[in-house]
Amino acid sequence: MSVIVRCSIADNNKYQQYMTIKQGHHRPAFWWTRIRPHFGIREMTRIVTFDSSCHYDWKAPRTKSVNPYGGNTELSDYDHWNKLFGWSDFFGKNSIRVGWRPHYDNSEGQAFVPEYMVNPKVWLGAYLKEDGKRTTHPPEMSLGYWNYGEELDITIEHITKSKSGPGVLFIIYGEHDNTSVFFKYTGKIECGWLMHPYFGGFPTAPHDMELNIQ
Image (cartoon, rainbow, N blue to C red; front, side, top):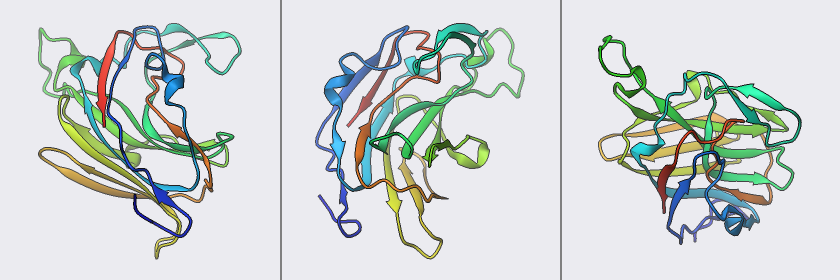
């Protein structure tokens, strides 16, 4: 455990979870047993490996999905960002998380192979919510493309004071590459909930997906 700023602690990363999000679900089984509060967290590190089962066609046809926040069943597609890990305040107005979605590149026009299976990667991005407003994910929020089966050392650091102003620093070390990206962020999170994997948006997982988080 290390002190990042006064009255703030770092998550001590003392667990390992092999998680499966079953087809038709948003979260792994028994997800409620992982609910934990935090009181001033400023840094979190996780070692994450995405199994190839996490890949899917995000351009697939629209399907009927139940809005998990209530309301009517909606037509939705898979063009959304899933959530990996991070933390929030108790009311959900402010949150800091890593988001992910599949990526594939068929710019070379390979034939006889489904488009979404050409050069499959995991696309990571900053997923921030500030004063109730969710940050979108244009390319400038990208944290890069990574291989399935690759062990990723991912750190999120909430920096409240710096020359660039308050913000969030994302650091990722992969097996063959690394990246470090800073985004300005003024949301205030003094205490709240630790956040865990969630598939969606509104759509549920199209098939079983496995990932390992340490």
